[in-house]
Image (cartoon, rainbow, N blue to C red; front, side, top):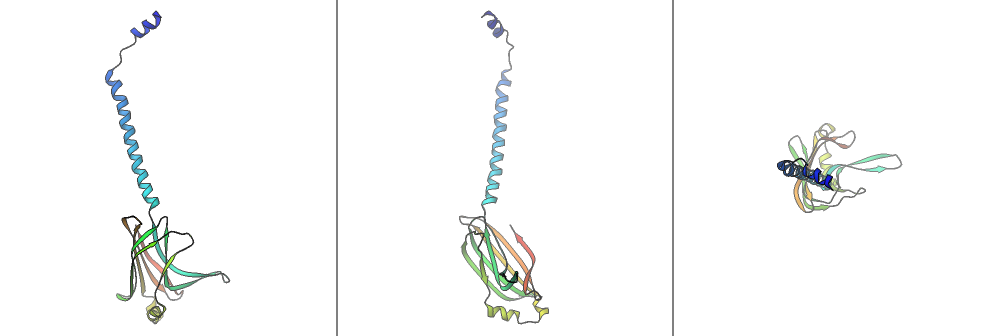
Length: 181
């Protein structure tokens, strides 16, 4: 017992500041790392749970010939990841700076599904009027599609814009530019 008493009495004195501030510094550092991890997790959650909406050409599959038959008077739209509230969808067709067709739809709700899409169709008669031109004028046609959408509960408004030109040889629209956020 005397040996233990001697060891305890002769134990070196420690610095009280060191005993207090080292654990406090470790705790503050752990808090900062936890806050940064929470920020990254929130950012990742938002990016992985927001809707993604886009538009493109419409066509049907000919299973016998194993080809896609284009339907240029129709626009296909898709939603991925989560439901979307389409606040505005505009479709325009211009030649040079002259507007030949314009349509706007608002306030639609669409749900994601791997095997489905929704589409917008320009009336066949309206489309025939637009296409009743020589091929050199048809190649100057430009189709503009813009979508504004958000998640179902609102929040940030996302934008998607697609600009296409008409290729009369393939009877299909070709992408010129595409923007999304």
